[in-house]
Length: 271
Image (tube, rainbow, N blue to C red; front, side, top):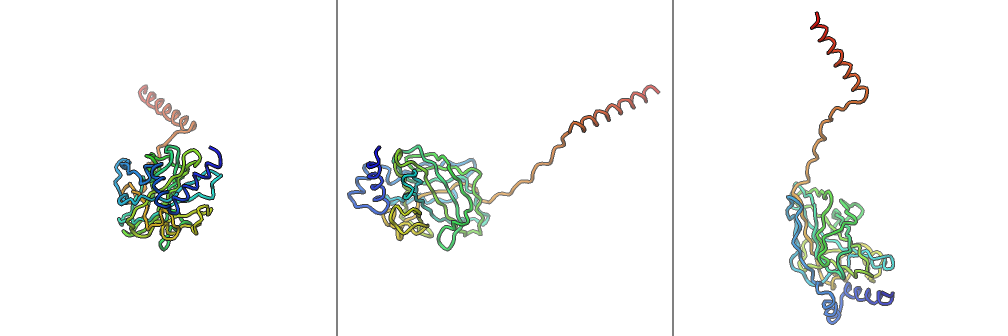
């Protein structure tokens, strides 16, 4: 694909991100029928349960959440949304499911990061957990994402956290990825950042995706995702007791001791 064609295709993606005309949206929907996003069945990990689910009320729009190849670094962007850990014993999150759309699926990895809340925005300076380079189960841009080792989120029963998704995908080979939107907003509006400024918004740090950044059709939105895991933050088990091992000298001393006992027993029998 020549550079001119790549730039034209990326321009279409930019139009999608910052709000398109009705005719442009219809054309994109024709080229990518999954624009509204699919909702694959969650892949539960062992005894996990659904801890949080906001995969309802899709609104047909999405925000770019992609780590592009070097030629398009200015367009690198990620989305984030908040949720409440509603159990006073906290949660251990072992998997995340997100609804999105893409060009050609199957060659993406994702980085998932959990943050504390800092007055209605992610506290990016103090991430709780980061899971880089995960290969998801990819259903046309919707992801089932296992989080190795899980993320422990303590809570008092009303603690707010944020989770971000950053999709590493080559635009030239696989097109653009979008994290789909939800018309119902729980808590704070979802946020979005484009540090390189390629999309021409004021959001080089996390800001309100629709009402400030103008992405996702410029609508007040949450993101479509669910979390799986266990209630409680788990208790570390004590290490197992040490099993004695013999060094070479220990083995020699044991052998000499057994030999001495044997000689003593033999001597007593001959007396």
